[in-house]
Amino acid sequence: MQILENEVRLISPTDPEAANTNSEVVAKLSYDQKFYQLTHDYLVPSLRQWLENERGVFLAISTWCQRPERITIAGASYLVTGPIIAIMEIYGLIGVSLKLDADGWEGSFDRATFARWCILFIAVGISMILIGYRTIRKNIIAIRCGLLLSASLTLWEVAVVFGVFTFTMGGILENSVFRTVAFTLFFWVSSFLTFFYATAIIASRRLKNRT
Image 1 (cartoon, rainbow, N blue to C red):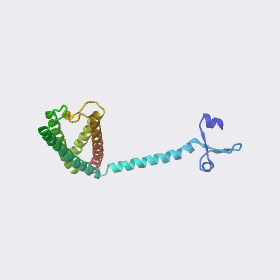
Image 2: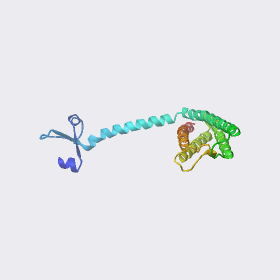
Image 3: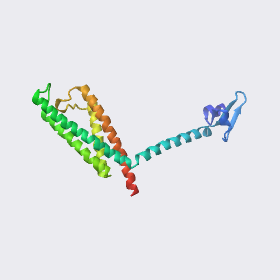
Image 4: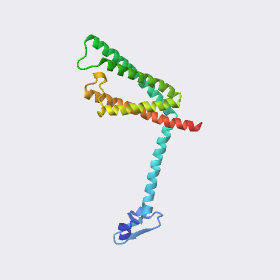
C-alpha cells in the first residue's frame, strides 16, 4: 500500500463516504482505518466538475459578448465620449486664449502647439461621434475604426503615464502629478471604450454568420 500510495501514486487516501462510491478499487487497512481509492477515481469527479464550471463561465461570457446589444453600447459610448472631448477642447482653447489676452501665462507656454493639440482632439471627438453613429447602424468598418482608435488612445495614454515621452500640450500640463492623474483617468475611459468595441467586433461577426 505504501508503494502504491507514495511511489507509484496509483491510490490516494480518501474518506469513508468516498470509499462507498462505485470506484473499481477501494481498500481499507485495519491497522489505522485508512481508506484508499484509485487516484483516477479520486480526481476525475473533481476535475470534471471544475471543467464544467469553467466551461459554463466561458459560455456565459461568450454569449454575453455575442449579443447584438454590444454593438449599440459601443456606439453609444462613442456618442457620449466624443462630444465631451470636443467641448472640453473648445472650452480649453477659448479659455486659455482669453487668459493669455488678459493676464498672460506663468511659465513656458507655446500657444501654437497648444492650439494644434486642441484642434487635433476636437477632430478626435468629432470622429468619435461619426464612428459611434455608424456603429449603431452596425457598419463593420466603423466598428473596426472604433476599436483601432480606442486601442491607439489607450496605448498613447499608457506611454504618457509611464513617462515614455513627455506630453505637456504646449506647456499647459507641466505639472507631472496633474498630468499623471489626468492621463490615468483618460486611460480607464479609453480602456472601457476599447473593451466595448472589442465585444462589438465579436457581436458583429455573430451577426455576419447568421446572415
